[in-house]
Length: 235
Image 1 (cartoon, rainbow, N blue to C red):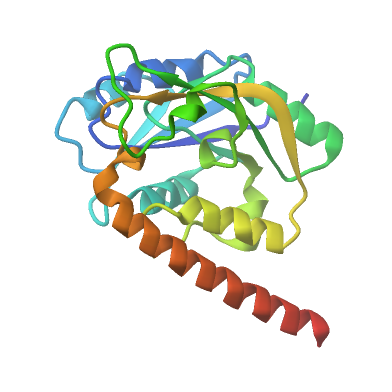
Image 2: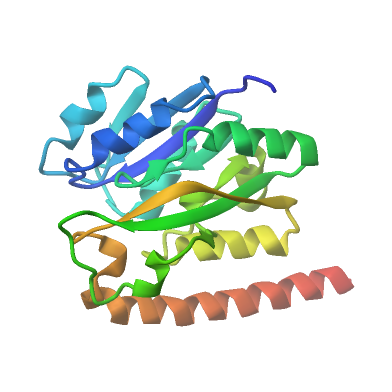
């Protein structure tokens, strides 16, 4: 297997409780050629100090537009790696996540892979109303940035994340990848462990109206994009 550099982009805001554990699970990979870019969305805790305590971590502070889509895009623009992945500041990786994905991509000639994910409840935390408790049972194919490992060329081809979204930017990106028929593979192994805790932003019930509006916006963009693609294909 080659030893190409892999860039892992980690958006974070006030990640102090779990950040060290998450970074360490990436640094403990059995694949050594890694850089981590922590993009800090204006934290008020010790996120900066924790990130800068690791020599393989590049820390950047979001001066403007401190949202997750923009954080991912900042990381992509800074990335030096041939391959790009993403991590949440509160998740954990299996130690062979990168090596398994890289081997699969090399052997199967695909441009990106996703893996299975296992959700787990942080001890002492409760399940938030916006979270589906059934996800804590079993494991699932995770079509999400945290399982994604992609060749940098994929972003050059289909673009970065759409900052018109706050929560649905990942679904929009995967839709564009599918529309452009980017070769991909699913690794049927649990390589990501996703922590459920009291402060998960994605499961905040107060955000449900915004999420529903974004779903409708996403559907419209997908319909318009497919229509344009079909029109161009027929010409």
